Amino acid sequence: MTRRSIAFLLFALILPTAVGPVAARAVHAASKPGVFATNGLAIHGYDPVAYFTLKKPMSGKEAYSYRWKGATWRFVSSANRDAFKANPAKYAPQYGGYCAYAVSNGYTAPTEPTAWSIVNGKLYLNYSVGVRDRWNQNRSERIKDGDRNWPGVLSK
Image (cartoon, rainbow, N blue to C red; front, side):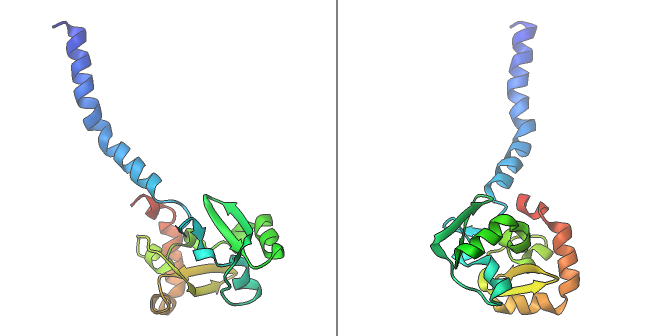
């Protein structure tokens, strides 16, 4: 066996071991999308603009859909859809729609559209109303922790 063959053999055996964990982390991070969606629908098909304008969760309509950040967002009207299109960051839930309580604790969890809060002009969703109540007990600290953890929690 020549030196070149030995070097190639070592390279072929060592490289996958060295790169494997890095590649595995990259695949895992890529498998958790930046927007929480159920069956491709952000906020379970609820209109993010309605939380601000109507002050309540409203189920959107398929006719008023918009694709953004890999998810389909639904709206109750074309006006809401157009407002979102013009400024998605204004209306989209924080932390990609993942549970604000979970993100503040360093992990992700799904959310329910009825477990919501608007704080300083930003929409936050939680796993449940009970979890939202816990999140509200120390909300300002939880928001600081969530901001610090986001988007790093997507790679966990």
